[in-house]
Amino acid sequence: MKTEDPIRRTLLIPFATCLAAAALMGAAGGAARANELLASGEASGLVIHDADETLHRYCTWDSQGRLWLGLPGGARYELVTSTADPAIANQGDGAFHTFDGAEVRAALADVSYPLDRIRADVFILPFPRRHGLESAAGPQMILLAPGVRPLSRAQQHAELAHELGHVVQYALMPDPDGAAWVGYRRLRGIENAAAYSAASPHADRPHEIFAEDFRVLFGGPLASPSGSIENSTIRPPAEVAGLTAFMLELSGAPRPAVRSMSFTNPARGRMTLSLTGGRPETLDLFDVAGRRLISLAPLARPDRVEWTWDGHDANGRPVARGMLLARVRGAGKSVRISWLP
Image 1 (spheres, one colour):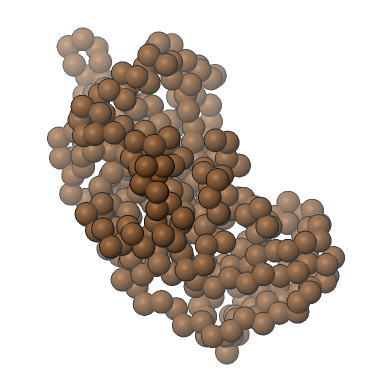
Image 2 (image 1 turned 90 degrees about the vertical axis):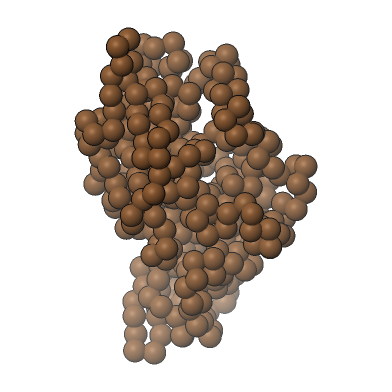
């Protein structure tokens, strides 16, 4: 299904290659998961390995001229070193373009989720894996795959946040935690295990829905410009009451004390939203379709936090009249605003 956010970058894998990759992953551990790893090592904190370091420290050539990536923990992947390789159906501009290390660090800094309990090695790959061309994640491991054209900042932020969501899920809500998964499925309306399972289409897999929820709720403005997720048949995460609080509680961090939000409703012209008892976090405004319109920086007052909005979206265009949703990141607090410009 089409999504407005740049979270998936396919390289247009030929159908036969898709089947081969699925068969390989299925043999290794059940239903294929297009962007999840089945093995990982033991990371210390969140460590980013730039493409040059990954190539020279973790990659080796074999006697047949093939390049292999060797990960902590023993997993090995053959890398595709040329866009002319038959595995790459869309050759783009003829070169592989890696993630930028500085941009990955900026994307990580934008994440508004408590990460003190999260450990992961983040490898920026110089070339894609032959049997898994996209970015991938698993327990304590993220692989950021290059594209066949230069990657935008939004693409890099979105993919990092999505894959980090997988790492967070593995660490804080692993599959054996049945009670947590029951609660999450109920919140998201995905209780039907036949329709939402690891064997379902990609957008319907619970792991992917969780990673997308993480990207939108905690990934920063560049990671989620619209607030929508890959699965367009379920509600955008910002509209799911209690979801932000549920995911924050997984981290073990105390829930911020939020008492009340005040603003003029209906709102016209320039408006100010005020929140008592909260932390100075970014406030996101969404339309009723779940598209993020703009992210507002907080202004901390002695007894409250304020956000001021001039009625325009992030591109400077006037926002049409209608119902809007305002949500403070990390606070589990959202309100509806009737906007009458």
